[in-house]
Length: 232
Image (cartoon, rainbow, N blue to C red; front, side, top):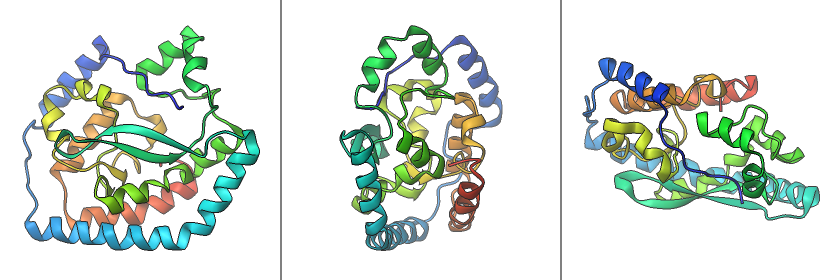
């Protein structure tokens, strides 16, 4: 099972959050119209259904590669907190060794680095095929099923584990007002080079600037960022 260890905010994160507070409101600055919400959901259903249909051969190839790589499980189910605090399991292709939790617990220095930013720059737990899947974000493709089911959206704030919500502090309620997305403002803005506090800022900025045009721009930019390996 892939690692989803919880961690509390550090003093540095609290200081950064204080700086963000000067710029971003804890309340929703702009609430999109009903037309936006209906059209966004309709687009999610159509594009996710078409994506699943046309990508089935890709799904099969990836599943075979994972199985041949180490013989482990094909998928990883990550617990996510979504709209209005509802929890669900986000589906991903497995990219880590089967005993990823145990491995991290046995290496305190790696655990410390992971807890700083909820990521490791060079994570030794990632498998050979997993490294390719992450660089291309192909491991995220199964989340199209979460989108089709209504738990996620194609565009939205990044998905987070429930243990990460306290890091949002006074922005927590605002964060839960929107479905998490497969892609979003943070994902196209240099994902690996941003701190956790900056991720929060991107999430809040997205919520305040939601519109059909902005969602369309993010969707269009995502493939370009993927090809450059700079974001998603």
